[in-house]
Length: 279
Length: 228
Image (cartoon, rainbow over the protein chains, first blue to last red):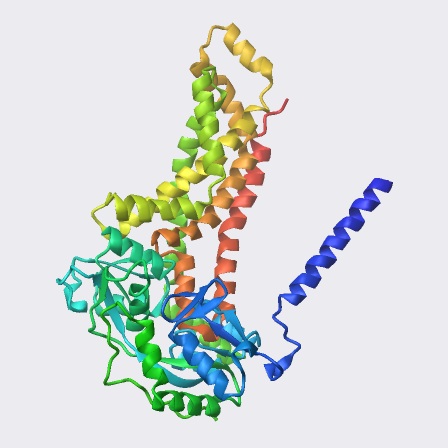
């Protein structure tokens, strides 16, 4: 009997510990607004050239824009708390107040505007193709008939290309790195998503010189800064983005993060002018 | 609130949720048959009087059972399909469906094998001795005496494996099969306004598929139990 009681109390402690831990996991919801000492910025951790966590270092175009904007908002670099925000979690992280803003290849769409606010855009990307650098048979989506193509499961790019090229041989993988592996080994002939993401993938040390961005975009994705609904930071962020474009830091951030991919951004649409903020 | 329900309803017009679930059911069906066959052979190997077969069966089970299913499917697609360029079907999408069935079969065969072996342990040793005493060799006694009783004793663990298999078909998204978890990602990407409803739809769908399997297993394990 004694033994049994002990077991129960151990179980009770374990349950209590689990509850406490999960309360912590809530992301500090009680420091509401995040106007205190740190600015919590959501970025991708797995997209080289845009948002990439390399040990304790964060690199990429999204990260550089985020740092610039944070500086303009009055936060020094060590006041920034980077948070990983995968595509599927972005809306939830904003509405649950787990981050203050998101710079994570976040396209502005009407559906998303229902649940979050956007500042920006700070870049206009377009869906493009990445091919092996010695392959000149693919110049755009019209050359994809009979070719194998790779994209990420459930992504806008995957759905777009299904509509653009009916009956395309589309492989869906969980990440673009897997797609690039397939492209290298010859399983697929092209990888498709936004041009700047492809350029970032192709400019990593391991891939430099092996792949080429085709440069024939067939969609328009406006990368915005995701904000919680009703945020008052939108105007200030837009001013910071405009300043970054004017003083040349924007141009440098794009080129330094896409070196070695034979890539130049769409000059007709970039640099963009931030849209009016939602009232 | 009623507009939320209208948004939710429009989800079903935009996406073919039933067709995606049907893919999961088809994956379950073919992988269940495949893993039942392979698992029975493995169980036979593990109880056979030949030491090398017993060793091979044990090695298979211990290796596959301790390998994550995602790894097996990613290996099949990145390694076998992309690197070795082996196509299982001329139809592009059917090819990946078959790879997914193979991956699910290979993985769950290890669990089916152990479920059957647990059933074999419910058969009293006297049954095997009696079979040998009347002159039956290993295979005939396994086929006519041991397995019929063992399978009846293994219904519950086999049912559990089937339930696990049903839910594990969602991993087939890793092998580029457009089933419900892949559709769920698409729905989240395009309809973040009803994200909770999307999760609930998928969860309820699986409950509807899996609960009957559980009820059937319980009923069958009572009905076919060997009365000793």
